[in-house]
Image (cartoon, rainbow, N blue to C red):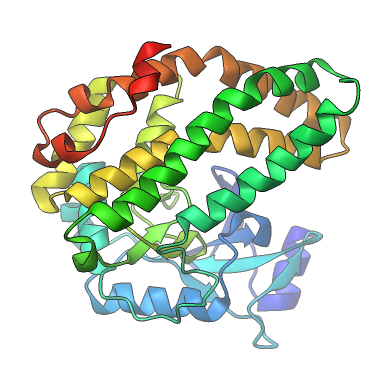
Length: 345
């Protein structure tokens, strides 16, 4: 069905199919394509994706995938029962080599430089700049309402029990994260100099992909692009590294060092990085997914993930309490307030 749908919508033959992570792709006429379901995108419009892609290319970003329209000139197509976008991957050329040699930290910093001075509508769905506080408050209110509902009835599962026991602690973390953002916007004297850039909805080592004939993950998918403060990408990379199976403080320090060699982090950036790390994103996402699905297999998966998350919280608390000391070589980290109660638990 996949191959037939691709031909019907794009008049392209799937000569050879392949997987790039969770994404399905194919080759035709020595060109590579990848299909991205809408549920895997950041929720931005096609126009936003095109504006950000053009901005990056104008500023020297060579390795960006291009959206392919259907024969009916539509951006979205129903492929194998799923709505999504088809992207054409750039060809692997000699000019990629200098970029491939860069570390992830340096590559991200250069990407942020290329994505700076972006002009887009403030109300665009892709624009998250300056909205963290409002977004977090909304998510907290929704989860707190569910918590109050759960208190009024008998817990039905072990996850319900664990949620009721753990929520007050994570409520404290979330309130601290929200207050950090609010205070930073007021206290930071150079706040007005900060500017949004093209970022990623969730930046990790897997945010960029590689074509089947290239080992390095360099290709940027517009479906991942949003507008936000660059600290978002830095913080989310650190979060993903921390929760990975091969967590290494050395890797985090190297990433920060390489990033700052290109684009030094301001004191406001450090405040925002720490605020994002304080915000227990994994806790919210896991519970939202658990209570948001009716499928038994998915509930089992997210239930196990939730308990695994709770088992790691003591390590996370230690990481947050020692974060300033770990990043001590970065000059501006000294201006970031500490959360004293984390060190007292």
